[in-house]
Length: 589
Image: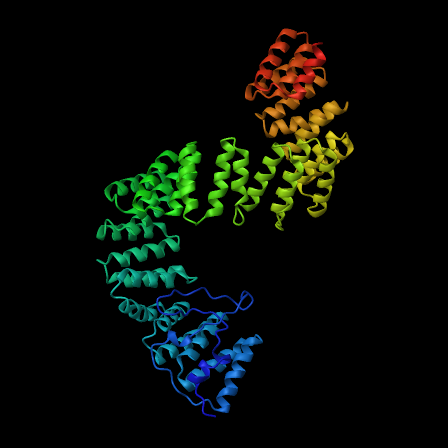
């Protein structure tokens, strides 16, 4: 059989060299990934063209029947979960063949099963076979640190840095990234300190040190490192942004924003820096200044879809509808983020009271995070236009399985049916929904409202009590149950108990104040009821509260006051049915 290991690697099957496990070593220029235990591993991967990782010539070792047998034994052992056998076999094969791929495989298996001594042993062999391979140097550095020998790791990290001498920043960030993946970050930072010790005037070394200290959550050390880096390179944008991040984490958010402002003024052409500043302004809710900064960024980076999109959203926030339309349209025209742009253009058209245009934009949303909400908005608009069946079709076109999304769709559809006074259909929907999502508090509450409108007071009470059993301090359920008992039964004292508890939990809620006023009215405490209802109306001029207050005033003999309250409410809500019904009941036509 005239085959070699090199030839076997090129064969279609490539059984012995398929990389079925991930470990600490990577191809040159890449960082390592945190190893997982066998129980945590969920996938296996194959690395194509594995030869590309190695800088030495691969040995042409004849593939004897004995060697082929050992390779197959090693790979079969791994596939069956016998990692110790596979590790031993691959390590011995690497010794025998001097093939660096086999040493790398042994190193990765050892890291995978967290056998740190074997990982170090295999990494030593790997470096011995292929001393110029950066992945091997990274692997042995990590192995030394994990085995409590940080000083031994330094030699190999120095080698990595030497190979990146033409780009000092890249080299140090590679080392920092490697060290940041260690569980013992204190030891990793000690190693980094040793590397920086001999490079006091190298800004990249201090910058990388600050990154690693930040990863270790050692903010004072990170701050010291970034300040030293800035002393050496005061206009380095990435270091300025790192300093900002450290200041924020230390709780100096205002100072961080002021610092960024100063740096942006000093370095007006640093687009990345200005973009960071604009984002921080958004986080601080200074939307006007953020908008101004983003407008400068788009001049420096014309056509940047993310910046155009941010400008569109900020314009919406600032109620600058023309600018919002312009920027979102430009974002859409780039061909990128089309679904997002269409969704917010739909929202804009809703604000402009152009429902058909809004529907059209929402219809173009076919994927992404806004898909569900786009169909919901189409459904709501269709219902507002009087076509509830069409509205339901939009909701039924959604195929979602996540419980939160299912709940959202059920609640929206139920609201559409209730608003259309199709309470029986709403009730059937909620029954079905609670079959899918039993015990869901939002759906129980919605069903209780539908049951109350249908006169099914026992069902409404059961649902509200079920909510209170699940959440004793559920304010909405306490208030709804108390109000329903006061309005639809003569269990006034029981109603008072529920509403009183709700009011204790949320004392300035106008709806609960209204409920308490209504309960007090039912209890015959007219003056107390009037005070409570007036307080509710001061918070919000709600037509239902006005109807209640007017009724209590009228019954209490204060008819002129009642007329005035109803008049004011009618000016705000001229078509409110409940208000009109109350007025007609007391003031004969």
